[in-house]
Image (cartoon, rainbow, N blue to C red; front, side):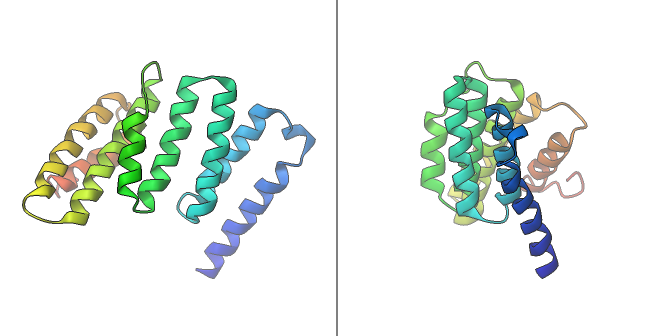
Length: 172
């Protein structure tokens, strides 16, 4: 754990230091560094990951790019879900528009929504609500899988998750 943490912190420190590099002063390059910082933090530190999603959202709003704005919002919603904030996750998904965005962003949206329903079903773990949540999740996951290119990591991962939740352990 200590070795992992140390390596993670070294990468994060290098990325933060690169923000001061004049070569990275361009807003588009800053965005890419913030995106990498989000990726480093997303499974490691909730608060820091959430803060970097706010920076990603500000940049996307500045650029007035609907796909980039939706992607940044999806990343923020992922952090909310990872923190167990189901209400906030569903509220955020409800107002997130995916009209006019790329298929990749749409796929991420549907897979995140599916994961939200799967997680809520796992949390409830009852005979009434869980099957309803799993059915909704499966519908969302089908939409995501129709958008992810076959044989990509995302397609295989989410296909396995869907099979796992359907009880198809051998296929998963």
